[in-house]
Amino acid sequence: MSAPWPFPSASDRAHGAKESPVSMQTLRRPDGGSTPAYAAGPVHDAGAPGLVLIQEWWGLNEQIKATADRLAAQGLRVLVPDLYRGKLAASGEEANHLMSGLDFVDACDQDLAAAVAALGQGGAKVGVMGFCMGGALTVAAAARLSGLSAAVCFYGVPPKQLADPAQIAIPFQGHFATLDDWCTPAVAAQLETDMKAAGRLPDIHHYAAQHAFFNASRPEVFDAGCADLAWQRLLAFLHRHLEF
Image 1: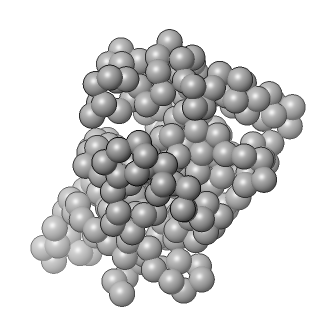
Image 2 (image 1 turned 180 degrees about the horizontal axis):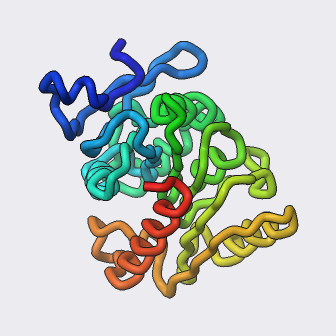
């Protein structure tokens, strides 16, 4: 198993290590098992802020890797745990099958926790962000895991038996679509209501768009204007709370 830290330190760079690695890494889970993860790292030392990025229900595909690269280019160290262990969906039916077979508690408390621990070594600030299924797991991670400083959720809310939004104590930003028939406006409103009732101050944004409006690989739902606005908002939020 490789070391749990996939990015080069200042000492590594001084000895000629590659400065901006983008590759698959192996992380150690709290239970001693292993988690494969896509890593994208900027030219920073090990204390630079990190972000755990969580896949959509399609799996660890090229689109989510490109999103990791885009975030890394902003100065973040990014890890994307491969929750399906190499499996990818080519259709909604396949994606639903893979998602239905995922143990969400294990994915959150083990796979995501492994990424948070790896990124947080040395006291670095760590955030979590995800889309669709990954958005639901973002809420779960924010409510269940320690070591996080911020969370950004795109159009995904888990059932309360997995995670109660009222338990989220870290800065939280949500992006939801008004035409979404999966993570509906009513579901998004309930998350906001639950958080505010607990004294939280979530930063929630709504877009006149369809589910997955941020995904440029899906032209049937992608909305460039909404995606760009969400990108600017999430960067400002992460800059503020991860301090990079």
